[in-house]
Image (cartoon, rainbow, N blue to C red):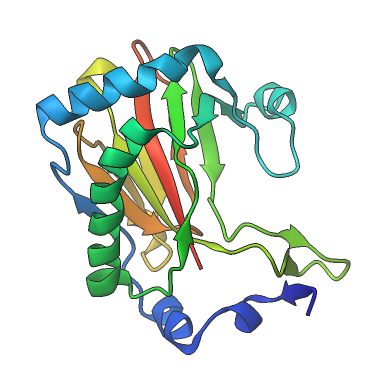
Length: 219
């Protein structure tokens, strides 16, 4: 068909089982050591002058800011050979964790998003995917040539001490309302993986800058 409509059409049997019995998130500490993360920061910093205000589906970046929904600086990095030398380890790590924890049918990943949150910048509650549009019936649908975002991977480039505030909050769908929100503070070089549909946010940075490299794995 030209469009896949509803989750059931696109998900494999393995994916359906995962949506019923899924891990909420998984943290890998020290994916890169201090020297490696310093080298990676030196590589991505050249993109600081090229970042743009992040937008969200259905909203321009200016609208997202005016509605207090999102205010962050982003840049999608394409064909950077120096980044790819780090990317191999990131992809291998995500692949191994997915095989043992999430068991998702993943076939590709998107170019990494370099994200910077400076003073007073934030991103309110949102999911990363599945990334699609709504059809006339109000159901999720997506062009057949696109793929669902299934797994998000966020690599911390800076330590929490460098950007007070800027906390990462995630809501666990299977938890009691009294304790469904977890606060995650990743050290530089560590990475969190979580299902793309889980709602999460970054609270306003008080001072300094919070920097991450975000990958979305699709299928």
